Image 1 (cartoon, rainbow, N blue to C red):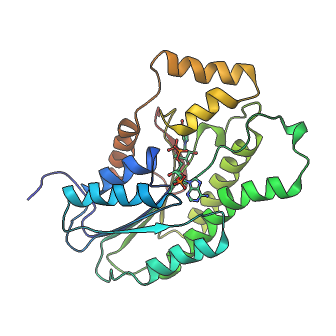
Image 2: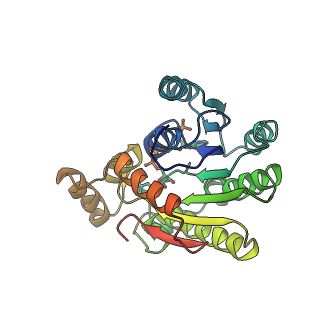
Length: 262
Ligand SMILES: NC(=O)c1ccc[n+]([C@@H]2O[C@H](COP(=O)([O-])OP(=O)(O)OC[C@H]3O[C@@H](n4cnc5c(N)ncnc54)[C@H](OP(=O)(O)O)[C@@H]3O)[C@@H](O)[C@H]2O)c1
């Protein structure tokens, strides 16, 4: 029997699991649940990458049930499809429900606030980054209602941008701030839930690449380039490891914002 502390029998849902932080999260979580009886649900748009990850996970934890849901979470019907898969998942005697709202996009960072004039464009960004996270969360909570012996944990992958403005990142900062408040309200309303907004720190992922190559603001762009050039970006594994420790210890106030550097 493994002496690695874990979540026991769990239903784990990770959005944006195809690459970056979500992928690293899936690999770490898979090692932290009881393989027999646990279910890992991976959602993203890239079907091939999800299935490659599924193969990788099941090579390490062969008993674990891993389901891939190819879904564009900016589309209402795809959000509903993920919820349907969860509703149909047999997980009557689990100890933990863990929902990682990880999927997000940086949006167009090549322009400033003054350049956003198209309501549909802004709505579309917020629909994926804010609305879908709320509706997926409520759908999951309805599909897996509270009961004695079940700990339900909702994790919002947040950012420093939820609390600090960055020039030319109006969509991203607005989305992260809104999302974080949304989860604070959820924590306020549902005291039986454990809700955490985790800012993972600057990660060496595709999103960072976009940030340092496309940001309109020169200071922001050179700050991102500097982190990369000086080897100061975090690996996803290092940040996931901190998140796992926090979740397993459980010493956070529900609704709190926690940064990798805290
Ligand atoms: N990178 C950083 O420095 C940093 C810093 C602070 C916070 N964060 C946060 O950390 C989280 C992960 O970021 P990351 O750096 O790993 O980002 P990433 O490399 O860009 O990966 C984003 C993930 O989200 C998925 N995704 C994007 N659009 C989607 C859509 N419409 N529907 C479903 N899935 C979608 C992508 O998969 P598909 O393309 O296959 O759909 C991918 O798996 C995000 O919430 C981000 O805001 C990142």
